[in-house]
Image (cartoon, rainbow, N blue to C red; front, side):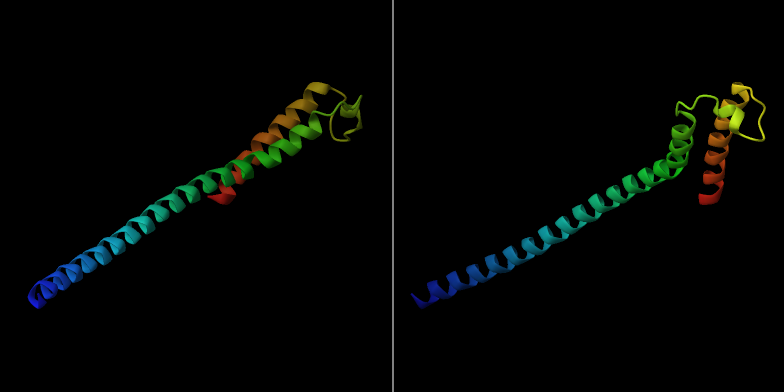
Length: 106
């Protein structure tokens, strides 16, 4: 009987070592998966930061030029009283903000 119990104990030790090995492999796989998820999240956050950096000043300029101020082109001192020049200035500022932001952050 002692030989059989010794053999059983041996098998249980082998199974215990196999389970420990599998558990460690599973932990490593979970860590790799979490690293991949974290990397993907960082990539998405990088893209969102770029979009926010570029579109935040444009949104501000658009919000200012989109307000319904009657006669505001005449109140800007360096522009003639023509509304077209006023809106061209708004578009020019928006495009220049995109270019400046791109150059500054590259």
